Image (cartoon, rainbow, N blue to C red):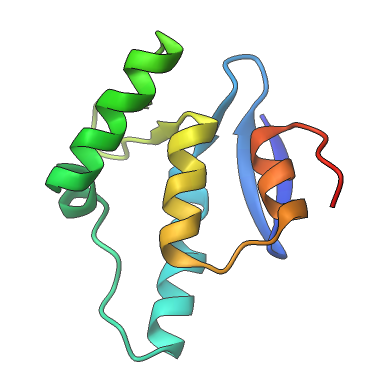
Length: 110
């Protein structure tokens, strides 16, 4: 596990499996939401929404890999593929090209 800096937030990234630990960004998402006077983020509700279910299906159909993985147990952790993580970040923050490059681990001229 390594820590990536995205939007000045530390996000845990599993290099071996190329997955982001969503739990590591949730406190930052909620801090941002509270500052904006919005309700706390509900990951379960977000994952169950029709739009996200369609996005997950599209990601999996196009990459032939799971869009997310969830461990079981009391302190379960949720991992997102770079594409699903990017979708979450776009829905919660204003991203710039360097932020997107960092998430997708690609080099695109700014």
